[in-house]
Length: 192
Image: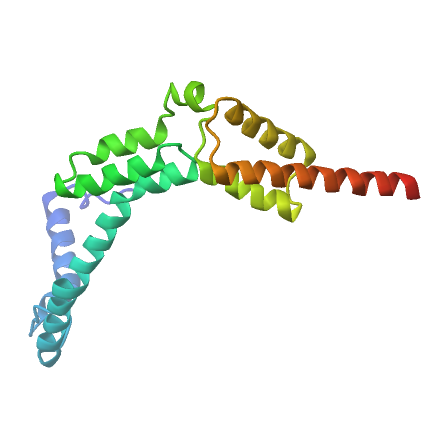
């Protein structure tokens, strides 16, 4: 059964009066208001701490972030063993003098392999890649296929005359590593 007063004007007045009585304690509660969540004695201390943070820490963080982004092309080129890594590093430094205008070029260059580098030098990798692989080969961390591939790359570079003295020494060291592996394999086969 429905109450006839709920739909009438008198019922609406009754509901308003009831909600006003319920809201009365809320209206009377804020007799004193504060604009801050901190007591007035701590406001000066908090304002000073925030000011020092903004004046000292924020500029240092911005400079560090700027530098980390600025050397990103150089790190990418290093990770990808880009053959022109040193030129990309120089372009990043020049970009500082030109207000960052050269940075996008350095970033793109770090991701793009030079087209004619392989045909001219026999490889599209930086010399440091070969040194890192040589250290792994001497430590015995390279598999036979990786060692063979490294020798083939060095042989192709030597055929073009693009092998530095350090890489020639690495090539000789790889031949010794291969000979030692063959001796170990032969001695294992003979003892079995």
